[in-house]
Length: 80
Image (tube, rainbow, N blue to C red; front, side, top):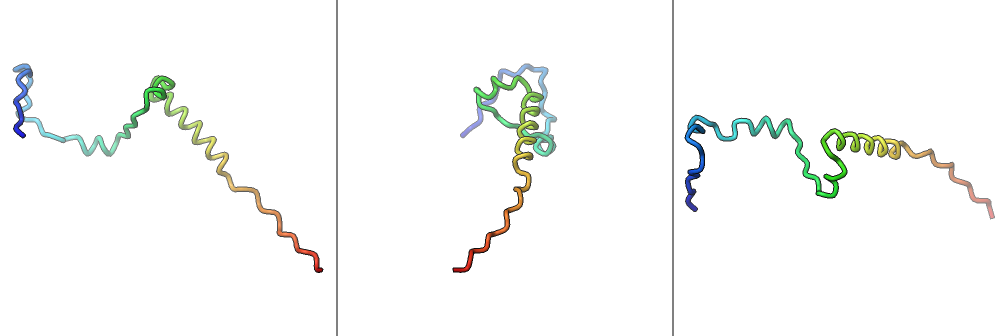
């Protein structure tokens, strides 16, 4: 497959000294992109709202995951 040159760039755009993928490692290391479904996007207008909801959920999960109460000692059967 042959690449077709993109001739719609303006002459003042000069990428001849550009380095492909120069910052890709830094971006992958420092970003965590999550794509939300449209119905969820309408509930959370920005990343602050998403973070607040996730923190509240994490706190609720932490409360419910506490150690279960100790089991009652096993009853001994009466001798027959």
